[in-house]
Length: 192
Image (cartoon, rainbow, N blue to C red; front, side, top):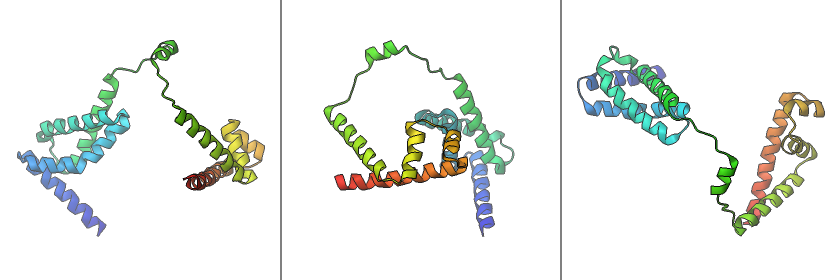
């Protein structure tokens, strides 16, 4: 059954490509709808800027529409479109202006502090809840979180200190974080 779905979809795409090559704009519009998420994902992965990736995705489809008559094998459309998207994303990433560093003194002169008394109160409350949440954890969870987040130990250092394999340390960190998150949820639910 899955093979039939795949073949049906591939046949539909081939038909749409052939229709679009014959000038059917609606067929090309359907191809855009089908492949827009893929093209956008390629652009976003390369550019890492949402709006720039959206703009590039539009440019890719314009390019594809202009060059569609050059595509000899309609079944190759998905790969052909992905290669256009990847190439255009790389070109844009290479050609865009680079970010530049600014002296901290210059930034300090234009930065505005947005912290209000409410922000300060909420931050104290969050810290207090975090301390209570940590105190509710078992000793192993507390020690694991303390070593990693407070003392800044690497996984290897923790492995040596706790005399456990690195995989075990990773699992302990994961479990401890989940337990702490659960404690924090319970504390926040009580506060509301």
